[in-house]
Length: 557
Image 1 (tube, rainbow, N blue to C red):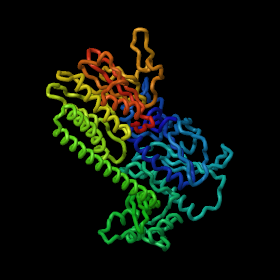
Image 2 (image 1 turned 60 degrees about the horizontal axis):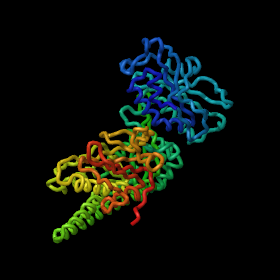
Image 3 (image 1 turned 90 degrees about the vertical axis):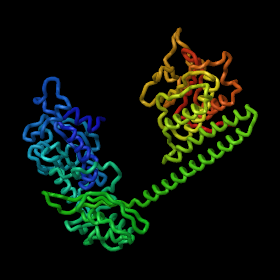
Image 4 (image 1 turned 135 degrees about the horizontal axis):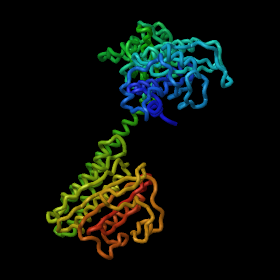
């Protein structure tokens, strides 16, 4: 189904500013549908063919046009948005977005557009087998009419309305008038995209002085939970709410102003352990403020849950911080022990242990600063690469670098990957580039996320699973007889231009503890693939290919 933006840009002459206004209206018009007990359908005029030059018109040209001439006959209408009520039966169960009708087929829309007024004339329609009352509301921004809202009420369950329903309908009528006058949505106010109180959560109607003229049962119950047992009708809502929330500290003056209906705003108040979200919509009709609608919603459980999550997040971050500190203490103790050893092999083994502990500490340090278990691994990779360069021998003269991006990874992937990357870099510096100048590069690439596999930095990746020809080298999938990997994956390549691999090298039978650790982490824990191969021009390439959708499990020891 095409979006509102697509329909406006493809079929109308409306500008980007007009489009923003329509987005703001549609983001908040569930309120009008619920108050009206009616379906809403937003129609905008089709682009006039006689004003189009040959080949059409560009967005830039359309953006320079002035107000639409509502006196002119438009060729037709396109429906760009639809909303059904949650308070009553729908009149149109089918989706009508994208529907195009010619002028004359919807008479009330044509009149509302031409005369720039709300049109309610006419008898109920029976086109779908049920009586439907149609109304048309022009949508105005400043002096410009952008389109028309068709309001359709299903009359099949019509009955004598209650006081609540009469209040809803009167409030809907006032909002419709504000839309036709360009006062709703409120100019300059951000579109309401978050979960605000709805009509059914609780509604109060205020007069010009800010006193309650009607409070729905749900609104009355919400205020009882705050500690106000009496009837709200006749009370000054701003004063009542401020008194309920009085903590003895300096009172926020804006609270009384907002809840008196003089300013559009959302606030949250708390009293006696209950938390209530309030939204005020001033009603301005004909340039005069006649009162306000106040929607309220009890959000106590939601906020307490949020606070519990925040407390848990803080506790988890503190745990990561302490684990990082403990790992740094362990690394310091190992360094002290290494200095006391006179056996070179023992000192080298302890130095390797220090690097392994350090790579894990880096991950926990990053986790201690994040609100969740997701990490921007590029920062960790850069720190691991820098650490490897700092501990390399003076004769090596290698400055490792990173190309590409690892992106954001969960902690269960980041920790073993950081340790494996540390081992691969150290192995390249100690064996491939020992006592010589050279280059060492880490290349990262993600695929399977809407982007086809490619070759970053000229390094062949396992993401390219085209069938090899007679003269093409066999890929790891060909050698194992397996299928190409699928889903979201991450490829990391550690490449150097050192001495290369020994002729009899086999990662599965190597005696190197570091490479055994890498294989256990990548293949056993992360469910990935590991491949060592000669690099074009000399040196070694180590390709790590891990799935991002895999159920990772700790490696067996």
